[in-house]
Amino acid sequence: MKPQTHHDSEDVEVESEEKQNGEEIEVDEERLPSQAMATHEVIRQEGEKELERDAMALLWSAIAAGLSMGASLVAKGIFHVHLSELPGGFLLENLGYTFGFVIVILARQQLFTENTVTAVLPIMHKPTLSNIGLLLRLWGVVLAGNLIGTAIAAWAFDVMPVFDEPTREAFLKISLKVMQNPPLEMFANAIISGWLVATMVWMFPAAGSAKIIVIILMTWLIALADTTHIVVGTVEILYLVFNGTLHWSDFFWPFALPTLAGNICGGTFIFALLSHAQIRNDMSNKRKAELKAQEDNEKSAKKSA
Image (cartoon, rainbow, N blue to C red; front, side):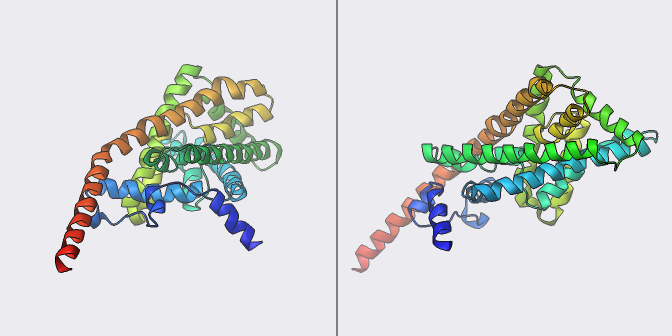
């Protein structure tokens, strides 16, 4: 079985200049033109690993992430019941939104919106058809897994006798609030949340041991701004579908399609493109320096000969 696994991993290898030259991605800040480029290369390296992972491993990790994101609705609902009447109750209630993200990211589970920037950088570095195919494979598998996991969580919250009536009413109120937005507002709100998640991912390499604080602050802001997120929102909307409040068609429109498009636009077409653009000159200068160093070495070799 092991030789087969090795063969499969070769079939899904990301194309890059480093691999063509038999090198590793340089992530040492001292050897790179800027700190921004060091951050870019760390995230690109992580993205290549995600793109090359086995599809079934991705799927199971994504399903686990979907289940874990149910914690956001649970925490927010419980906080709403017990803290909404307190001064600053709005702030405390929305802190519950962060729970699912903390679990998913620290447990290294696959979250679709995280991959709108991490897995995109290798494609921007070398936009071949093979790499684009790997990106679409990753997105498709992870999104499917996230939706399966969230559907299981939403169904369990509705069917299992775990929560009392006030908490169930809080789930209903929180979920119905999402559906108050028309499709265009869903799309616009999702752009903001996609951008904020991408910003959070970009901060991770510099965050170090403060990573959990970054996760809490950025996802808390997503909740406070009342933006829409395809994975957390799916738990909320499917809860309404399973308890009979909404029809299945309402999940796809006005929620899922505008929200998915907005998250991709915010994470990929805005943040990832701008982040890649800012270090393109650094990458060009790095190549020039490498060529100059190579020429100097050749000249030195000729003189010594």
